[in-house]
Amino acid sequence: MSEVNRPVMVLVRPQLGENIGKAARAMLNFGLTELRLVAPRDGWPNPSAGPAAAGADVVLDRAKVYDTTAEAVADCAHVYATTVRKRGVTKPVVGADGAARLIHGQEGRHAVLFGPERSGLETEDVALARHILTVPINPEFGSLNLAQAVILVAYEWSRIGRELGAGEETLVQPTAEDALPPAPQDELDGLIAHFERLLEPRGYFLPETRAEATRRTLRTVLTKPGWNHLEVRTLRGILSTLEREPRQ
Amino acid sequence: MSEVNRPVMVLVRPQLGENIGKAARAMLNFGLTELRLVAPRDGWPNPSAGPAAAGADVVLDRAKVYDTTAEAVADCAHVYATTVRKRGVTKPVVGADGAARLIHGQEGRHAVLFGPERSGLETEDVALARHILTVPINPEFGSLNLAQAVILVAYEWSRIGRELGAGEETLVQPTAEDALPPAPQDELDGLIAHFERLLEPRGYFLPETRAEATRRTLRTVLTKPGWNHLEVRTLRGILSTLEREPRQ
Image (cartoon, rainbow over the protein chains, first blue to last red):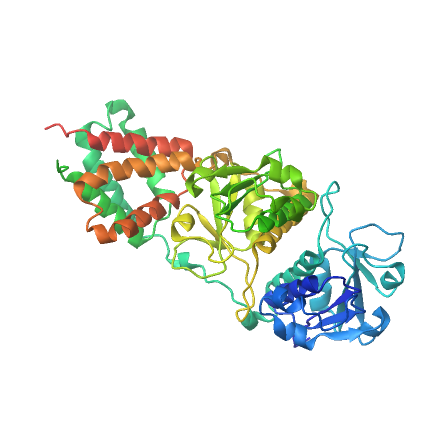
């Protein structure tokens, strides 16, 4: 598959326009733009959706409305029904991560169905799906809302895509700015020697019988950080400052 | 580590009570219950939080309030600063999944800092952290809200925990020395304060206009190592020694 496979998010009979907007916002954060609505309770467009989308208007503008779930997924080869409840259906169950791997790995359009806020998907919606998509949650408090379910699916699609190397150029990967390597050993040795020069005349390495162990401890503590050369320079400056007499 | 390591979620100067409630709901979905609030704008308790928590009252009831971020993480050995923006800080960057692996793998308390809704974390909050936690998002539309950021971190903590729990026999056991966690934040703060006490009268923080940046650099250099409490004690001893007059 040469192109990145982006799933279609299908909200089935969503109740509140605000939640449709939030779902759009959640999608666009991770680069998903195709939203489909099945029989939204308050019609479409819905004036509450725009403000909740917080700028994700492109997703709302392109949203398509269908009368039935079957029509909404008619062009899709792979359908996932999200549900937090166990149902008596004999379909394979995947997590959001497992679904993401299937989406990236299998050609054809993938659609993820999300049920209405209060009741979840009906049995006939679930019947359209080949997989159940579920997120294991606290058994004593299962209360994922619609936009939260959407964002977890979108996030995993994005995360797994990066893991697989798909669509790298479309997402910001923060550069690890700790790229500066640890300072070379001679700079570290210079730092340790500077410490020793200040500590020695103040009796830090006494008694003599413990001196070797104390030096080893000092080296261990100063080696552990892996300070880079800028940081070692900062510490040398600190030690030079400590050599000065304090002003009154 | 025999027990599951549950991170503390720290909301820094949150603005809306509704968002605090939603964050609590997001946490409890994945079994996290320890919420800390730093200087919530509208005080605490906040009447808007309860309805938004949708039943996660146990999290709100136990929430603790602090005046400063430093106080909120004083007992934590590992602090993560969540940010979507790139900053010129030299700290390792991890995703929500990487952070989850660290949380499950390293002893000591872990705290995740989330900034205010509009502005995000301030530089001095980020300075307290050893890691930057970021979620790669759409560069043209980066708009994760507070509760969404919380749920992604909580979800990954839960997902990785299950992943690691599935193959418990294959887990790499850290050696005894690795097992000592970084010292709690208040011990680190004590060390930094000791450095500052010695450096201040020697003019290290001059000129005044650079003082704040210099203090931040000092904190960054001393935060990076993740020294354990024995190592911090060694360094306190070194500083006490340096306060003495050298013998001739």
